[in-house]
Figure (cartoon, rainbow, N blue to C red):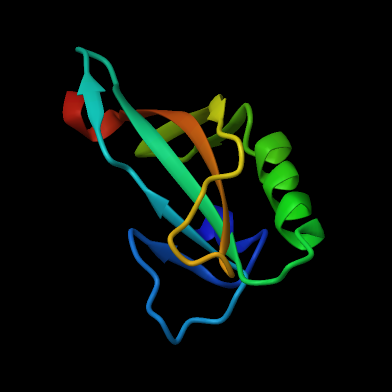
Amino acid sequence: MKLLKSYHPNVYFQNATKKDRFPYIVYNLPNAISNEQQEIFNLDVDIWDNKDDTTQLETLSSLLWKELNYYSYTDEYIQFSIYRENRLPPLDEDNNNIKRRKLIFQLRYFDRRLFE
């Protein structure tokens, strides 16, 4: 997703590999609902780091939480808007050296081509 890459270079869809460098962002669109006019997706954004100092992790999480809220995109074919849904507290991971923050957004998507 180009939007997330504008905030950080290491962005992956659904999974990162073990060789990917920290910190990185993994995003997913795990489910959606549709009505007649639009699709509404959950946009999950996980920010991962392996440093004891969580300053960079928290800074990036806060930036995304602030900047993505009310973000909108429109072109001749599609439009979408993003809204904050939930910011989870620090999550426990199996590996104590890895830290993660999870941000959940709602992405409302409309495709004009469906109505041509």
